[in-house]
Amino acid sequence: MPKRPEPIKTLNQFQILNTIRIAGAISRTEIARIIGHSRATVTNITARMIASGLIYEKEIEGSATRGRNRVLLAINPDAAYVIGVKVSTFQIGCVVTDILANMKSSVVMPVRTSERPVAFVSDLIEEASRHCVREAGLSLKQISGIGIGIPGLVDGREGVAYWSPLYKRGTTSLKELIKKRLNIPTYIDNDANTVTLSQLWVGKGKGINNFVVVTIEDGLGIGVVIDGELYRGSSGFAGELGHCVATPGGEPCRCGKRGCYEAYTSNFGVLNSAKRLCREGQWSCDAPDALTYEDILALARQGAEPLVSLFQRAGRYLGQAISGLIQILNPAKVIITGNGTRSRELSLEIMRKTIRENTAPDLFAKTDVIVHPWQDIDWSLGAACMVLQELYKSPLDRCIAAEKMQEALNKSE
Image (cartoon, rainbow, N blue to C red; front, side, top):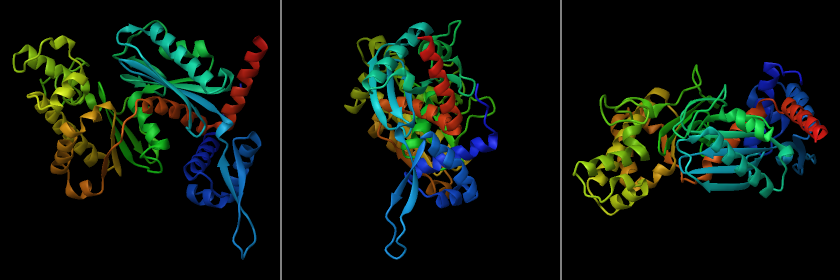
């Protein structure tokens, strides 16, 4: 077992590596200025990183007067590879990335996971992971870790999913099942947190220290970045915006309460309300139980009432929730994403109007509210970034540990 790194040394390694990642290529002097440490400290730590193959020096031609080339530091993209997985109600997505979050391969498997045993879900994750690793031209021995994003009440620090709408808990956790099957370090977190990390690493939040990500799918989630770090709260459950009660005694929510924001703004909530209106005779449809979110979205776009009103109501509730976030957290950006953003013309303009009407003018003027064009693979990429975040915190020690683990595996084969 390698010696656990000292906290200060680990922090310095993360700061340096992250600064290089954001810049692309940067000098030691510039790193020292950005992170607030001496050039000698930066030189000592980066020397170890160069020796391990994690980063490398690249020369840039200097000015004509000086005649000296600048030496910049850059990350070796092939220093490590990771897997990212997103489990959702109707599909499992998987990616393999290098240490800079560049995607090497990906796959999306359409499958209904809801209410299945946890062992069934782990089977699918294992299959998707092995497929992606092969497609990337790699072997599992070259993978430094796997990250899994799921909806629900998840403590990412402990890797425990206390509740998820996607599968039934078994005697062995999803994390332990995957770790045993693939023999690589395994991490699990709430999917809104993983998407937030993807925005921090390669998205609209790159280089920004304070922002909020709002995800709209079957649930409503948020991820919060404060001072460049994902905020998790005292118990690891921060970000459950969807289950804050907006209207006491209102629409039923999947969590068992009534009137949660999620019951009005999420795809699941809008669909549930549409089915109820049909059963009550307020809207005509042939088979309410067979309705899908895609059905009601298409009908609303054609002007069907009261479906249009449901989407507009979703936009107003979402705007109220985001207005509260802006006034509490004062973020530089609010990034709205998820496949629920497909209802943009029906709900998101009303959302913007509601934010403006309910937010203090000075705060509203200083907050950039943007909608991120959605791709299914974004969730999986976020799960990969979760693993990269861990690797960057202690890259040298983790690389050594990974090498020793693979040596042991090779001897046992």
